[in-house]
Length: 244
Ligand code: HEM
Image (cartoon, rainbow, N blue to C red):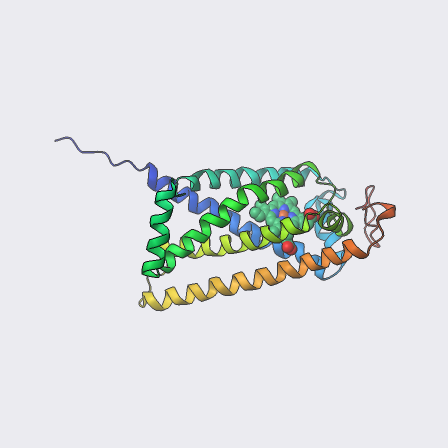
């Protein structure tokens, strides 16, 4: 008797989509915290910047490391988006069916899924702009250079949209991964599900507040700092050939 072979490709793709999503979610959790160093001081944000440029390792800064990192993140981002495309409603008819289903059944998980589709679609465009700038201008990062970009190069509104979409997308995504791969199957499934949902909402709120506070600080510096000397920051403690 011939045994019919099961095609494992869809399951493998699902797994890779979850895995790349988890990597990106952890990246963004770190990213928003590192970038919030501006809330402590300009000097602190400068130190975090030179740390990523390898200063504490090589004694010199290599902005190429940032380009490399941003390229690696872009590859994972594109991979994740390509896998997610399979799940987008393919026609208006499909979209209407899902929408009606969500409304009629008050089906929360379908609503969460719609948020993932919308925020994911937004990020195709806005995250790409940001990543491209990070790859091509890695030496223009720092308390003044970043503030200049936010205000004078009008990146503020883009960051605002990116912040709302990426934070919701990341934590809803993590919640769905936990649900999907069965981490909520404790003794009381309903209770653990409610707890995870609360945690998801809490994390979204906390990260949006931190992100908005940082964005406000970059905007404040961008509006008040005198850029006639350029965008480089002169550190009081770190002396390297090239200042930010
Ligand atoms: C290795 C890749 C990345 C680097 C080096 C990087 C670096 C930075 C830096 C330095 C800023 C401060 C503003 C500026 O200098 O323009 C910033 C802001 C921001 N980035 Fe990234 N980024 C990267 C990837 C991403 C990705 C993949 C996302 C989301 C999909 C993202 C979302 C954001 C958001 C939302 C802000 C504004 C944050 C706020 O409101 O406080 N970044 N990024």
